[in-house]
Image (cartoon, rainbow, N blue to C red; front, side):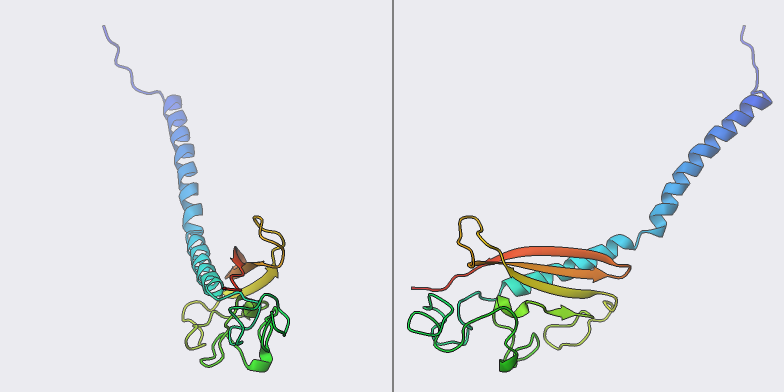
Length: 186
């Protein structure tokens, strides 16, 4: 014999409470994800900007002399003289006296050192210098500093480049890379 018994009122209420708690837990997770779904996009965009700017900086030469100097490929030190530069040793920061800027066609940044202290309050197009549409809330800074002894390479021969991009809502991304001096080229 089987007894056919339905749920009592108490059992039904307990079932409703248990299911209600489970559903509210799942819905609260969905709600949290829906509220912060734009955040990964902001970080991803900041990362793309930082990668692009770091690639730009690291693609520049790192030499004892300014790349326009006659002895750029043979100089063995950053002094003017027979074993050094013909006229223009390279130093940290851009050569303001030469009119170098990131956006100049005739005198662009031509060395990794030139980017030290560079910053953009608004992300700007490299070719035009105009603000990039849709990136108004982002800013970027570049810091270039000597890396010291690095993987057996003597101090002063390697630079540490750090690019920091700040996204809307003060979300930041920092990327670093190393650039080693390749001159002199005998």
